[in-house]
Image 1 (cartoon, helix red, strand yellow):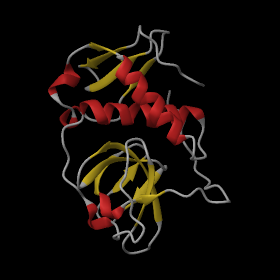
Image 2 (tube, helix red, strand yellow):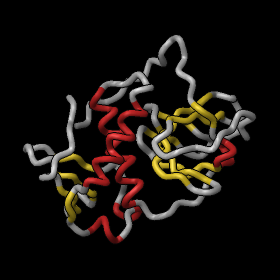
Image 3 (cartoon, one colour):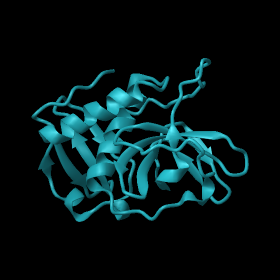
Length: 183
């Protein structure tokens, strides 16, 4: 399913589910993955889906197309990245999980990046949701990531120092990711 931003879309907070929602104005509702405690005060107020929101959504979607994933998962990642960019409270970097990259570049908004795990050197895919001078807010762009102290799932946020991130290079053999249909 392909979704296209519309000027009838609106953000609102659902008190019962304790989640930020996006009314897609066609009978569909998108539910954010982020718990209420991670959201800023502005996430608890209804607001329209703006032209800036649409531009960010399309920017994320365009970059995510590099990853072999279903359109539903691509839309979920793009919308959660937009929510992270607009509504998440600041996070502290958690870069100790990753090696310093020898090919680090200056990350940019909506870039698909990789970070190598310290113990295994396994490459982990992320989408840059917000760029900072020293660190970027990233969303996990693969189904799961088992770390020594927790497990992250698709779209979970993690702030990572820029020197741990490197440009994503699509492999000749696509990764076999199984994404859940969410929207």
